Image 1: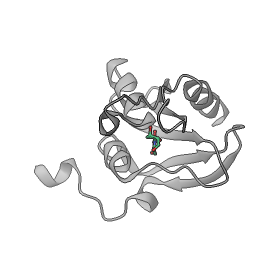
Image 2: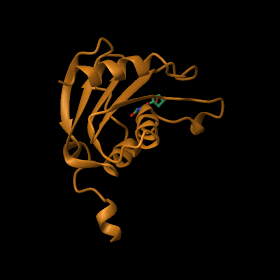
Image 3: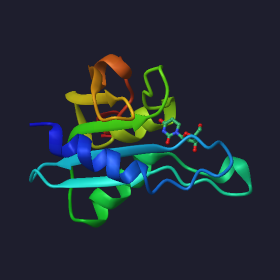
Image 4: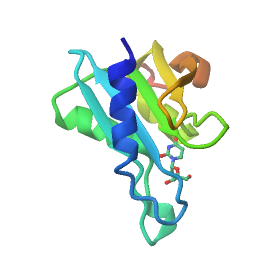
Length: 131
Ligand code: THU
C-alpha cells in the first residue's frame, strides 16, 4: 500500500540538486484524496539557502490542491536512517495528524523504519495554539 509512495520518493530523489553536499534526498507525501506528491532537496551556491526534500513535497501538495498530509516517505543513501530534520518535522506537523506514518527508506526503496509524526515530534506546537 505504501509502495507507490516509496516509489515516488525514489523518483524524486533522482531529481535532487545537491552538488554541494552530494547527499540526495527524496520525499513523497500523500494527501487526503490519496494523491501523491514528490519533492527533492535543492541546494544552491549560497549554502544555507538550500532546502530539504520535505518542503519541496509539501509545496507540490499544496499547489496541487491538497490540504492534508496523510502519509510520508523519505529516502536517502547510506546506512543511517535519513529521518526528517527538525525544521522539516515542524513543516510536516502543520498539515499532518499525530498518527501520520513517516516511512524512512533506504536508497533501494526498502522501508527501514516507520515512525508516527508524534514519535518524531512529541509535545509539538501547532496551529491549535494560535486559536
Ligand atoms: N536534507 C533533506 O532534504 N531532508 C532532511 O530531512 C535532511 C537533510 C538535505 C538537505 C541538504 O541538501 C542535504 O540533505 C544535506 O544536509
